[in-house]
Length: 199
Ligand code: HEM
Picture 1 (tube, rainbow, N blue to C red):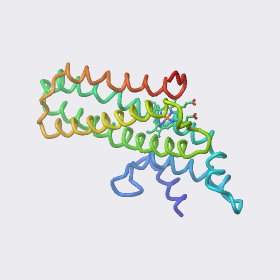
Picture 2: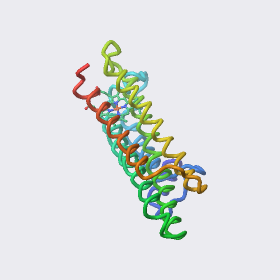
Picture 3: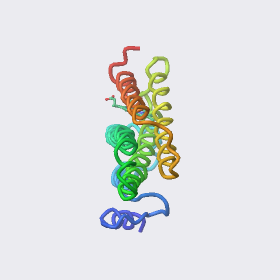
């Protein structure tokens, strides 16, 4: 029933939420993946959670990287939208302002929020997978700090969107251009921490 609902809304061209206020498309993709691979791996009796996580490791990591890419796309694009919103659109009239507000709302609700949630879910699943994180090394802490900063930046974008919506934005295009560099720097710290691991 639930899986049917999920697949139905996934194929449904009208973006009707499965659960009110939660956009369906991205969640449905995640839930459907979880369904498909959980059914293959879960059944044997006595399977421990840790064994399950080890079996799922390649899938969890793939889904983690897929959600990271989607999240980063939104985090890079949103401040650019704000730059255009301040510098070009506000002077062009109310209709154009409305178009930009819609673009910002949809980017946040349908891409950034679900992608952030998915990144956290699959990232934490990797953390709980036995033998993956060496807590004696330094990289989990640099990566952790940068992830928290990235999550802060996500919420900062959300608050700036609300400012635009209320007509209360006080920041300039230059401010948003500067803030645009924040996710770039954090991404470099995270990827170097988790892959090159020089620390
Ligand atoms: C949101 C919370 C996050 C948590 C809890 C988390 C945790 C983890 C863990 C434990 C791994 C497994 C490392 C391994 O297999 O050895 C991993 C892999 C990875 N993470 Fe994250 N991560 C998070 C967010 C991010 C973000 C924001 C990025 C990029 C900007 C990122 C990029 C990656 C990459 C590229 C890998 C694969 C590394 C490899 O090939 O081994 N993660 N993550």
